[in-house]
Image 1 (cartoon, rainbow, N blue to C red):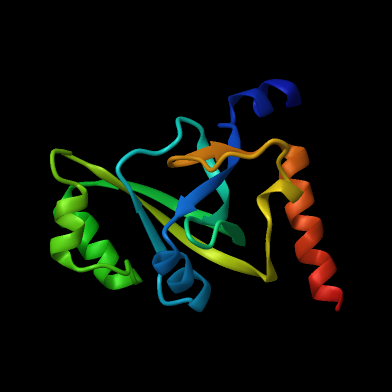
Image 2 (image 1 turned 180 degrees about the horizontal axis):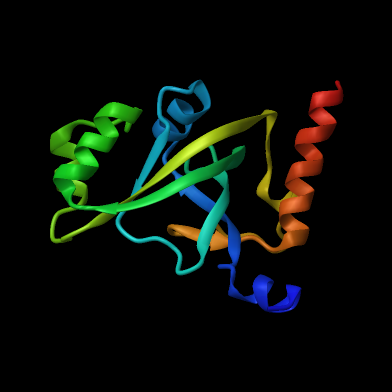
Length: 154
C-alpha cells in the first residue's frame, strides 16, 4: 500500500468551536471539569475544541484537545461525569439526556486558556454564535493557536 492510500484511510480529525455555558466553561478552565457532555456530536472525529463561553460572556476563553469521545447510556455517562468532573448533578444529567438512548462524553485534556478572552470577531468575519458547534477551518484554528503562543511569550 502506498503512503497516499494509508493517509486516505485515516479518519479526518476536525476542530470545532463549541458553545458552552459560562458556568461550565469556567469549570473547564479551572481544571475541575474534564468531560464535556453532548446530546449529539459532529460527524467528523473531533481532535480540538475552541471553547466559546456563551451569553453573557460571549468570548472564546480556551482551546482544549479531545483525548477520546465516548458514546454511552445515561447511566454510563453519569459514571464518566462523576469520575471526571462533569460539573452537574445526576438529576441534571438525566434531564439533559431525556429522550435519548445514548449521549456523548468528550474527554478533555491539554486545556490552554487565553489570558484575555478572545472576541470572536477577531477570528470569524462575520460571526454568529453557534447553537451547539461549528467546524473551524485550518486558518481559524491557526489564528487561535497564534494568539495562545503570543500570550505564552509575554
